[in-house]
Image 1 (cartoon, rainbow, N blue to C red):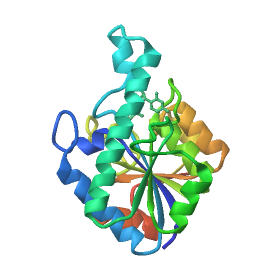
Image 2 (tube, helix red, strand yellow):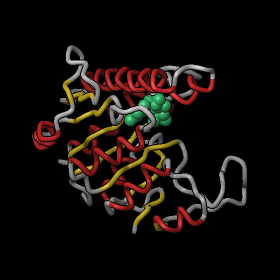
Image 3 (tube, helix red, strand yellow):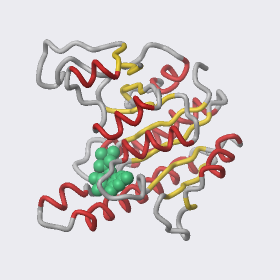
Image 4 (cartoon, rainbow, N blue to C red):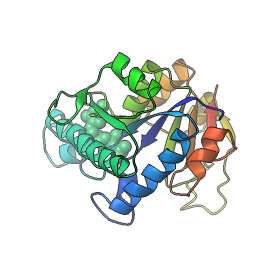
Length: 235
Ligand code: UDP
């Protein structure tokens, strides 16, 4: 395996599958199987889960809700997704710990860096819920932050598209995919990989990002083995 310790970022929307809202149990078990494949190869796996399938702070604020209050709802949504993911991982026989950035001790461990690393060393999947624990941030920022904190070698951003394109491939049939691209070029070309705060944090800490299609069976294993799947953002 090319990578020994990875941080997998899954958006909340990914969990919806074909639905318009909420969680599709079929997707959860598919993801559990994908993760199981790389755990069996000895890869240490941490996951940051989003909440956009349930609630986004910006959407609440746009309807007149206080932004901080709305972001708290968004953070709780990520904990709900984390619990759902943990349950599917349990069913797949994967030992898993959910750590939350906001204290909710009856349902999840608090985020404790050293404990998270210990879990990883023992072969447990660690799911980070609650984002960064702060409003005005996204789970992409949480993904980069946690990846740096636990010394992950790479962020794997699992999406519905198979990489970064010159333009939106769903709207422009001339769009071509990058195999590699530098952080500077992403910024120069105005491409959207993560929000700027998350992206800059990754760049400053020289943490590469791979964007790939998580919904294609076997892709996660391929990425972790070093196959040129998706797009890699490097220095
Ligand atoms: N959120 C937050 N702080 C964080 C991470 C998330 O306030 O550090 C809130 C924010 O309201 C966000 C919501 O949680 O809209 C869900 O996260 P995100 O939009 O990143 O989820 P994704 O797009 O990955 O599904």
